[in-house]
Image: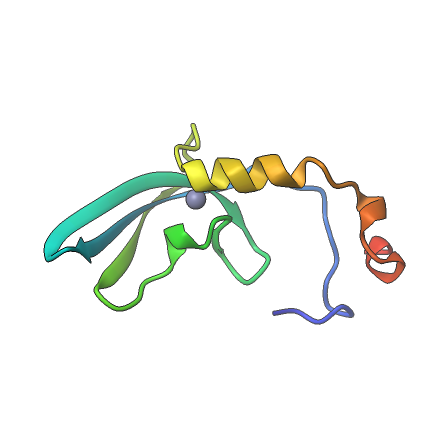
Amino acid sequence: MKTNTELSLTPPVKKTITTRVVYELDGQKKEKLHTHISTGAHGYEALCIEGSTGGENKTCHLISEGALPVTCPECLVIWHDTQAFSKEDFEPSLQQL
Ligand SMILES: [Zn+2]
């Protein structure tokens, strides 16, 4: 993660990633194909994190970038929850970014 001195906030650009997550549940192979809001907060990933990480019995494949509409329900919940905050809700040193 970037330190405060390296971080600067530029106007947001509408970015998405479409990923296919393959995982095992109760011994059965399942897959989720969703288009997520993309953020560069930790590099390059889905807003919900879930859509861009692998793990035990789970793989994540990037299918495309820039597609709409967003189809991930978790990304919708996170996007909705952030609407309640304004820049003034962050500590003053961060508001300078
Ligand atoms: Zn998502």
